[in-house]
Image (cartoon, rainbow, N blue to C red):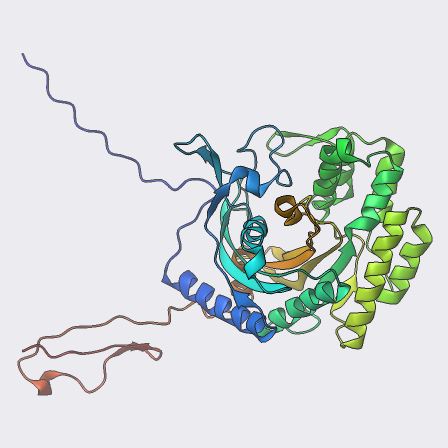
Length: 411
């Protein structure tokens, strides 16, 4: 007796972890946001540029978390020439490659913006996606603290253009050189300690999520998370951990008062250099009447190694509740800083640069929850009818007050 033919197995439809499908409402909200941001950036004199989603992995650089293999932290593959190519981790490293490749034909300083998706080969979780949108602006070719102050002021103006009132957000500013001075003093200065310093930076950058106890563990031997995964720590001794934590705690007072407190604790040349730059930024934002929105905050470090000076973050201070009634605080929705070494890798000469990135996907989720984005599609259905005569078409067709419907008579 012949065997019955096996039924073909159905392929299971499933979305990879850390990704999301988006419908008309989400797409319309993104379009609305991006247009508002674009208008602010162009008002400041920035022009658009677009870079591809893939770059040679070495162009993304050692600054990304690729310690042992090309695809740690980034999604990578080899092309037919056996060259490693990676999906972009952010929009800054591709811009650095673009500027270096077109350096002689670009105006200086070169001021540009771009929006697009970036990709991170990291463990996904609540609010942490492997693909998300960013909107960047960068100034390449200016070493002046005025360029950094301008980024912070533009970030503040962007928040207000998106409907977030003053007092509901803050732009926080620090300087990597201040922390570099502290890390030198605890014995992790120099090129051979770069990996250890990056671990310190990424640990401090998690303070809002993990608290002091979690960060202290990551600065020491390491930490096991709720799922049981272990993250290796920076290996600092107790005294070094205490000094790093003390130098990165938020401080109270005016910007001028905080800078004075930092001066009292500085004990290195590079640390003093960072404090002088913070002083200049503080004076510029005060003179421009942004002092209530842009605040010096030693707790801001940013988690990427390529920052070389001022660093900044935009934090939403608004709180709301999720669908289960639990309190939600959104925290950082954008950030950036000075990266004077990134373009220089390609040029072999100093090329100062600074930039700011808005996390569009994260900010959109916050604005939607706060009711500050219209998530209804900006287009409606089209109804095609074939009546026997034109009089058969009703005078008014509509499914809602803001969803227009079109009736078309067919011959």
